[in-house]
Image (cartoon, rainbow, N blue to C red; front, side, top):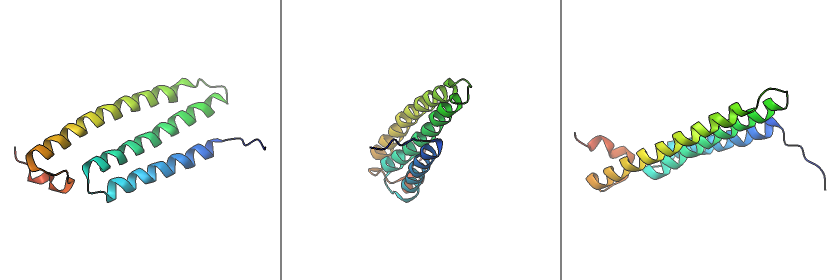
Amino acid sequence: MAYFDVGLTHYLVVAALLFGLGMFAVITRKHAVAVLLGIELMLNAANINLVAFGRFRSAVGLPALDGQVFALIVIALAACEAAVGLAIILNLYRNLATVNPDEVDKMKW
């Protein structure tokens, strides 16, 4: 069994693929929950980048906690985004009986 060293490039490629899948989900989906899942995928790709840069920054001798701290902030923001997004979707479904994001403009004040 050969030893395989995972470098920064590997993390960046995985994060780019994950971000691309999230962007594809946001652009192509007609269901609001699927759009929220795509946004979560994009935020997780950003977290992978933050933690990877923090890890490889420590390999050069600099402090490594910056990436992890920013990743925790992004996780907290993602939780807030999910709560607010689901509340909006529930309100949309209650008022219009649909979760299609294209019909949001039909809501009145």
